[in-house]
Image (cartoon, rainbow, N blue to C red; front, side):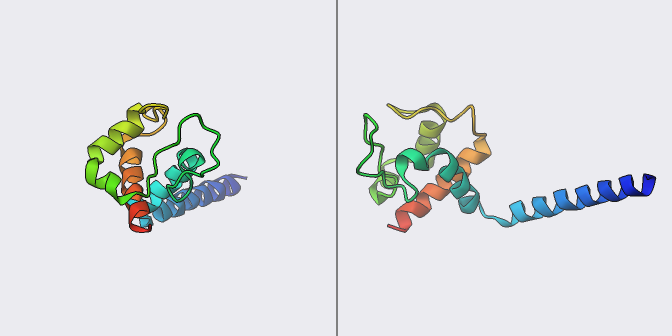
Length: 114
């Protein structure tokens, strides 16, 4: 019985270690992409381009527009995500600063892939 408990604890520790290693192997853009899909893509579209058929009262900003990143600094983008802007809700309660930085890193990849 005790050996069974020890084995389960060791397996759980191994699993946690492997999960931690996998997360560490992703770069900030990849982690930001996952956060973006879960929190932003519903309105902005998975590629950063909002669908033209949106039923939202205000068309979300096209995040794939390279000009956006010439006008706004990373701090501006982070503040908009954290505090909300216009019709966009604030995500500062749901996302930590590191998450916000990773989303901003991912946003730059959207403009490059246009």
